[in-house]
Image (tube, rainbow, N blue to C red; front, side, top):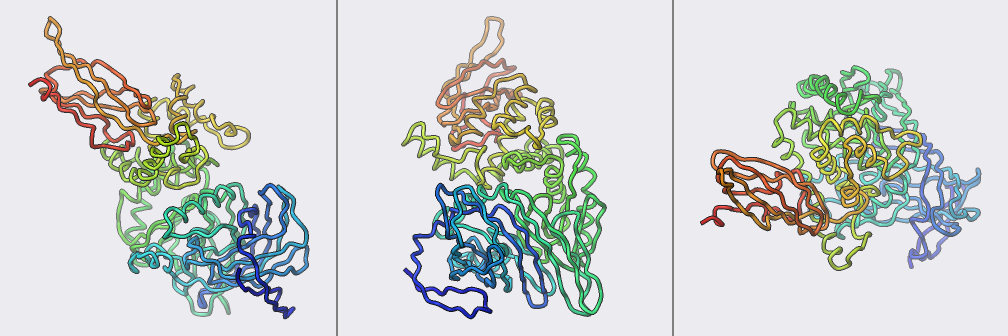
Length: 581
């Protein structure tokens, strides 16, 4: 129980004290399915003000009359109406690390009528406040201030403005449970549930900036292709329409600065003064990146934008086909893979996160392979492995305790966990590439269509690849996409070197997979004067045997070159020489 204050519109002058049982509020009963906002920015005051309409949908199984609307704790609710009439609401602080301040300003709204299950209601809202740079939530869990500020770079300021949405800054209303960085995976679990609920939501905002005389004209960036430059007058003004579809993998974000516009539509490039060399690196990387992406995924279709960040050490961020990254340093490799990632999003839209983001990260690995060979690609993929390794180890433990428990992990087909639909998915696409070959995978990707009734069946992607490869891949998709069975764990179980009467040398190798997910894994046999690599399919909790002809005496077997994510890499080398001595 807590004492809070009911506040209606300020003009009503109504102030009452009530006790509200927090446990009685179902904060995930409603989902905001549509946003239609007018946003006003005043950089000189670090202020933001918004008004407009949202549509809330009752996703619970019963009628609901109370909805909890949340915005950043640095913002304040000013008005809430339904059907043109003011409704009363309780305004209270709500601790949650889904916002950079570590808290939200929550309005507990009592609706005029109950909303039946699956029905929706339109609500008019108004709120305002400031968005300064704030690293509270990270510093609170022990992150050094310098690192925290490079990570939480969101702010409205006179010189530079860039603000990401929920998960960083709740500059628009959301509806979530509390999330705490210090409590294991609490934050990520809350964000994942929220993303899954708003995956089909529509977001439209008219963003207007008001400045003062004498300020350098600013460029405003939100949705690529709709950038505007402020006009010089008694007060500088600029406005643009921003829109986003599906908030599961896309985060509403806006930026505004004294950008130098080096755009060549449909590619938009905005750099800050002093970062000309870095901007040129991106400009020079565009043509080879576009050629590569077109060869794999088709020609880019939607506009792509790269916007500079003021802090050279800022962590990069992407939302759809907009990438925000510092151009302070000239790095041609980084510029190339960043562009490849965004161009894949442009060329191949998808509502499935594991397809949309997984293919973009897979493309980065393929681009590295084109530049530096297979090992360069595997090194790049290796950077992704740590992101989901611990989670998959937990899944393995749960599967061992509860055999057949399909709810133990995060199936790629349904997850909104970034470590899965980005990092694990990148590996899944790489394994498919290794299994079916480049031509077959390109053919399948070329036939992929997200629009209309095409990608409605969860097995749509599997069937495209099976048709192109003329191979049954149901077992692989079941282990890696439709369910989360953890990771494989390969080891050499048995080795038998032998010679024929004519002196030809062979080795029979049996590999065991101790894990609960199967895979086709490469292994390399080292022998006098060389080495040979082959591949073998080893299902979960099974063994597989193959015979390999050699041109010398075998000495060592190395299982898995890094193309398959494993739970344990310490048992992948087997010394044959010890057997022969």
